Image: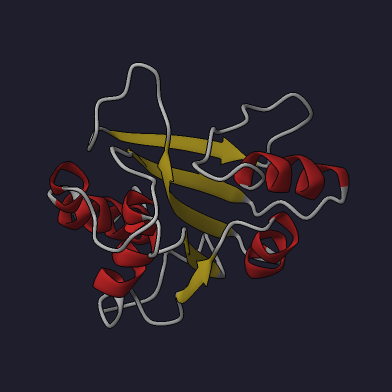
Length: 162
């Protein structure tokens, strides 16, 4: 498989979450699923969502794809969301991660420090269970392959065959 489109440059995929909090492990599960399947040169990272570590992972990237579980009201467990930020400026949308402090704060801090990637794509899945324990809920487990496929489409870029 060839690398990401030349227009993108360096690309990273960051799976955010904690596999010991049920559906919060969706991001890491997607990164595991992508291992060995991403275009050459794409970096895979795991993160528990701490803002400075997220910024370090995507620093200098032309494309950063973040996969995370989110809370929603009313929740539809397993529903997928995709949000694209192009070098977002002040007042950009702040995604609601399943973590108390995380992606929204990382975006705000990265904007203030001028350390946003060229394009940031958030793939999120609505969680059913964020309590202590291992294993994804059936609704979230059922969409992990679709989530991984969506990330691969983004890595191939708009001009690539899907």
